[in-house]
Length: 81
Image 1: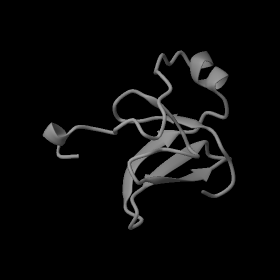
Image 2: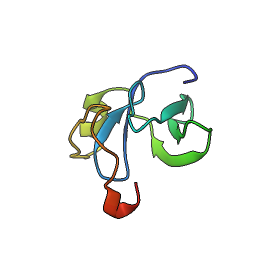
Image 3: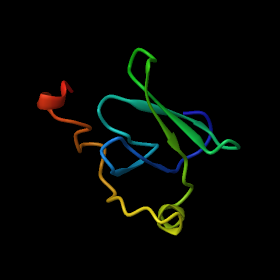
Image 4: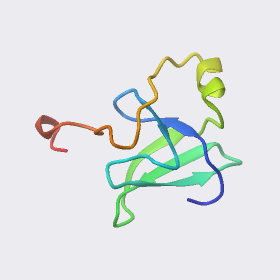
């Protein structure tokens, strides 16, 4: 991760921490652009999201997405994940 902790919304509508996105993924953060790139172990881009510095910032944006731990799955086997 390049520089900063924060939160983002995943493709399932959950809020995740950039420090522990789960799924074997890691995050690369561009703080000035408020951008999160979620990358696979091999460095492939699997998700792009907006960076929110705090959970209050997520709420302030009008997003009602539950905060989930990294252990929470990103998808299901029926989705090919």
